[in-house]
Length: 124
Image: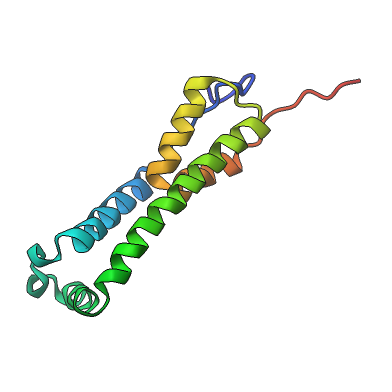
């Protein structure tokens, strides 16, 4: 997608570092929420001990917060579409990419869109 010009098709990928962190963290969270019995907690050091404590004492909360986190991502993705309209991004493909990227990576994507300042010609 073009990063300059009219801005109607603006799309910029977020940070690969944050995408990797979010992917690993959400992957681990999914594992904890749905297959906690298969996690080798004793081999994960302090993270394993903490995970075991949470699974033993707060599994229902873990699962509820998991779905709440996805709900937040849905909200962020919808807000990304609203921001696209406000910032003059009208290209359907660019809007879809913003929606999907924000749905999957949340604020790591949304922050890029929030920082985007479209160029406006001043009328005389």
